[in-house]
Image (cartoon, rainbow, N blue to C red; front, side, top):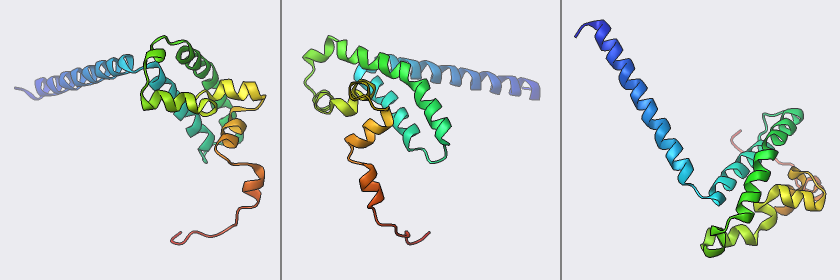
Length: 140
């Protein structure tokens, strides 16, 4: 094999590997349930809320961009006929914690932003933040 043939073969195997990886990823996403897809999107929104590297404007933009997909996924889960027959711990927990699972619907019902609603649901209020002691972490 010449050097050119080795490079072409290497490029071909790399491209084939990437193609197989993309196919496997798309298959696993299509096999994921509606609740799992909602949880994935919800985790991305929470990650945006908690990301200290984002400026407030950037955080608001990321959350606004996520809202249409989040509301669609919430509606899909709420209307999914398969949910009625599933009594798994994940499904039970999701519906027991409605305000945390269906973040956008709960925030709209309470007339709050997603961030304010989520923080209040996990027990973080302005009062709790203001009364928290200020300490230095050791090792920093």
